[in-house]
Amino acid sequence: MSENSSNSNYFYRKAALVGTGLIGGSIGIALREKRLVEEITGYDRDPETCAQAVKKGAVDKTAASVLEAIQGADLIILAVPVLSTVDLLKEILPSAAKGALITDVGSTKAWIMEAVETLLHEEIFFVGGHPMAGSEDSGIKGADPALLENAIYVLTPGSNTPEQVTVRLSNMLEEAGAQPLVLDSLTHDRVVASVSHLPHLTAAALVQSVAGTDDIELVRTLAAGGFRDSTRIILGNPDVWRDICISNRWALLAALKRYKESINSLEKYLTLPSAEAIEEYLQQARDYRSTIPHRGRGILPDIFNVIVLVRDAPGVLGKLTTLLGEAGINIDAIEILHVRELAGGSIRIGFRSKENQQKAANLFNEKGYRTHTSE
Image (tube, rainbow, N blue to C red; front, side, top):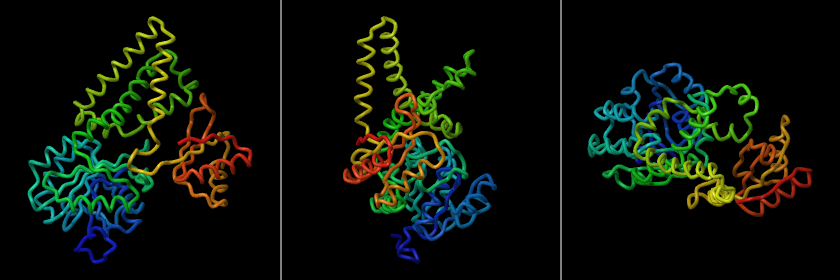
């Protein structure tokens, strides 16, 4: 906890939230709801966004300028697009309070951390941050502290950042519901290029591949769950993703190269054609995908899932959760799955224990729902 805090329950006395959009707003709401900081001052270049941040409870008050917002702050959160972060850092550093911690929320880290090493002086600390969370909604209207709940939150400390500074930030984020993970920036960028940034680009490419066809109206009519779910992430803010692509382009280019090699193999199997090779290709992909847990391995406890097959009907989700609540079975994860061509409409409900998983499955079966279980 902060030694300068007037309340021992606060990690920081005064926080400045620069950028009150989707991620910044979600962090602000989480910190205020759980009383992890004493006061948050917000600033956004859009005054209306700032006003909405106060109404949604993301900040206590707003400032007319970024320098006013950071005045006296012992925690400064830069929740702006990646390519804006370094310029903003240059602007605020001369006015930041001695001993302040600055952190960001950018989806790429090496580009920012390299600049930090040349800009930072010994009286100010920096820990890069990347909450692995998001939504197709954008802006403060989509801000929700639930975005942080059980989300991996990568931290990349500067080379001169004392360990206790990183630990303090990590502890606060854990209290906010996230799961902090300390990595070096290059490792972070290489891995997220493959598992986060590349999927976004492949979704964009998939949409582009059908957008210009003569059958576009039929595509809109017949697009099933697989297409919708595979391309949902492209609904994110293009400005944010533009900055991600530019700032992490080398790692992304390497990931794209591997992806093209995989697509080329599939094209070859279809050209031959080779049913055996296609089946093996799909089987290998399925086998590997089945090893990827719904939550990060080694970071969070195992989740035991019950998949409930349901019809589209008002209130069906509420009925399921009410059944579990009345039975005293706690839900640890929930997800709506829209893959009708595979298994009909379904809802994935996760539990921390196999015992609760089995209790839930039995309960749903007794009530006439079709289920299957998985880990």
